[in-house]
Image 1 (cartoon, rainbow over the protein chains, first blue to last red):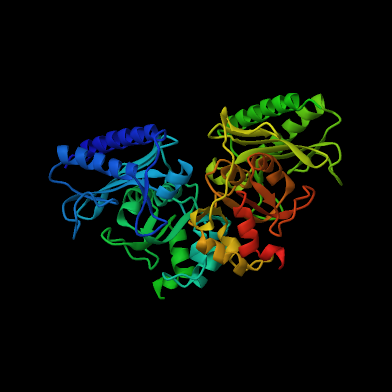
Image 2 (spheres, rainbow over the protein chains, first blue to last red):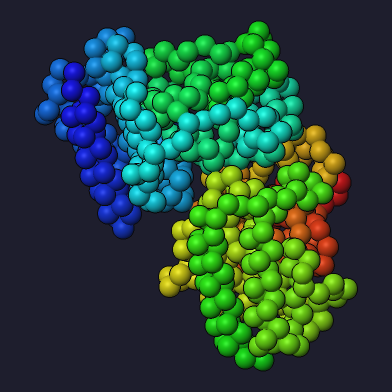
Length: 265
Length: 265
C-alpha cells in the first residue's frame, strides 16, 4: 500500500475543503437542528463530507468511508482501508464563533490508524502524521510527549463532566479537576486531541464521542507516544460511540489508576 | 481631555508590546512561581508591564497606573485618569500554549471606563473601543449585542466553578451549565470578555478576578450594550478582587434572576 500517495491526496483534499469553508463564511449559514439541539449541522458540514466522498471514490473506489453526516458507507467492521471523516468537528463553535473547529480525517487499515490529519481551518494549521514517520504541525516536527504530574498538568474537561451525569460517577473526576494546574474546554474534540499532541494541554477527557471525532487526532497523539483509550483504559474500536481518555504517557496511567480506579466502576 | 490622542498612543504601545512578545517566543521562558502555583509569572510579564509604565510616564506623567505585576502605583481610589494593565492575561496559557493569552488595557476617568483594548497577540486581533464611539475588531465594527435565551447560549465557565468552592454555592451554577447550549473555558478572562463582545459566546462567569483582568474588556462589552457586574449584580469598583458576570443584555438579567437569585445568597 502506497501510504505516502494516499497521504498526499488526503492533505490536498483537506486543504481544498478548508479553503471552501473559509470562502463560505460570507454566505448565510443555513442551520438545521439534528436530534439533539446541541448538535447543530450546517449545509457546509454536508457539502464538505460529500466533497471528500467524491474525491475518495474517484481515486480509491475500493476504500470505505465513515463520516459524521452519514453520507458514506454503513460499516459493521473496519476490514480493509477505511477513511473516518468529521468534516467540521466543533460545529457549535463553527456556527457561533467561526473559529475553534477543525476538519478531522483518519485513514485506518484493518482497524489500525495509518494517517491522521486535523486541520484548524481558520488559523491554517495542519496537524498531520503517517504512522511511524513522525508528527508535524505544518512543516514543523512535533517533539515526543513525556510524563507530567497531575499538579503540573492542564486538563481538557467540560464543566458538565464534573456535574451528575449518565456516563460516569462525577465524584471520580472532581478530584482530578481539583488537583490539576488548570482545566480548559475548547469545544472541539479534534482540536483538543492535537492540543495534547502539541503539548499545549496534557490530558483530555470526554464522556461520549463518535469514531470520526477521534480517529484523525488519535494517530497524531499515538505517533508522539501519547495514549488513547476510553475511560476504562480499553482500546477504542472506532465503530461505536465511547468515552475518551487521551494523555501523555505516564500521566495516562496515573489518571487511570489514581482517579478512575483502573476502570472498576 | 483628548481621548483620541490617548487612544492612539495606547494602540501604538499595545501593538509594540505585542510585537516584542512574539519575538520573545524564541527565547527560553524563565518561569517563577508566585504565591499560588497556578499563577505563573514570566520575565515577559514584568518586562511588558515596565514597557507600558515607561511609555505612559513619559507622555502622561500625571496619569496613574495599576498593573498586575505591581510595578505601577499603589492606588486607594480611582480619582483622575488611571491605566489598568494586564501585560499578559492568561499567563498559564502563555507558558503552556504560547496562545490564548492577551494584553489587556483599560483607561478610566474617575472610575468610568473611557478606553478599552484587548490584544490577542498571536492572532494579531485587536479589540478596541472608546466609550461612545463604537467597538471594533481590528478595522471591523462589532455589531451591538442583543438578548439570547439560556438554551441558545454558550456560557464561559470553568469546571471548577460547578464543584464545591469557597466563593459560591455551586448548586446555583449547575442548573445554568445544564440549561445552556454549551459551556467553554478558554483560560483568559480578557479574551473571554471580548468573545462575549464579538458574539462568539453569550455569558462569562468567573468567581475571582482582579481589576486589570476585566478593565479593558469591560469597556468594549459595555460599548456594545453588554452588562458587566459581579455575581450579585453589583457594579465592579476596579479597586479590589471580585466575581464577574458578563452577558448580553436581557440574558444578564435572566441569569441573575433565575439562577443567581438576584444576589440573595
